[in-house]
Amino acid sequence: MTTFTAAVRAAWPGWARLTELQRLTAVPGQAGRLLQALGVPRVQILVDPAGKLAGTETYAAFNPDSWGLWFRADVIAAGITEDEFWRMANIAYHECRHAEQNWRLARKLAGDGWDAARIRAALGVPDPVAAAAVATPLTSGAEYAETADWQYNLLRDGHGVSAASLVNDKKEAAMAAYRKSRDQWRLFERTRDGDPTVAPVNLRNYRDRLAEPGGALALEQIGADLKKDYVRDRELAKQSFLAYARMPVEADAWAVGALVQARAGRAPLTPDTELANLDTDERTMLRIQ
Image (cartoon, rainbow, N blue to C red; front, top):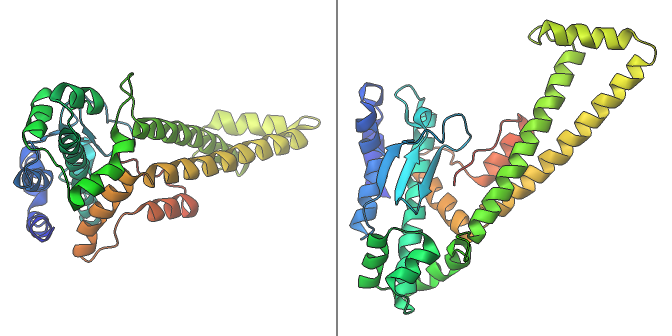
């Protein structure tokens, strides 16, 4: 951690002048090199090669199937602020921790007598990673015991779905429902208050409805229903987020990632701060897979 934090700190002064490849190398790449020093097969780190992260809330994601870590382009852009820079460093370390978790579990399964094909099917990791795990099995000790806590989260069923995937999918669905109801309520609220940034047609339609017989009561009921949906969906989003963050694999990765910002003397990004953000200023919670 000390080595990583020092490398990150050294990268910041010239960050805005670095190319995209140099930025990847300076921070996420440094985390990847630390993984290799631990014996983890090399993780390919790229900026959203398939364009799947653009326009989403997912800042970065480790993919066991490709053994790769993808960053959303704006998260690692040259123009990010220093706070965003350290948050990105946290995310890089968090995601690399997921790679380490999968690697250690593959080794633990090998130590339990699983062959490479079975490990490949259970975790989705590439064949070379499964073969390397079989060559370096983990059979006992503290790492073996800790890895056992992650097994339930990461093992996939016969359809290729893990418990972690199910929890993540439910969280994403809850967050999507929350965003929709929040946007609908906020638009109604702004329209009701005559916000000049609202589309003129919306303001006009609201005034026309208000002028109709019974219009005020009808609009009041619409507003009450929209707010009720918004509050309900916000609570469901919070609970789904907590279910995700409390999984052993996520609790571990969040804790490890937070150490980066803490070592730099900055308030770390944690599930609690994300929930506080949701309550205080309605920013959408960060999704780290």
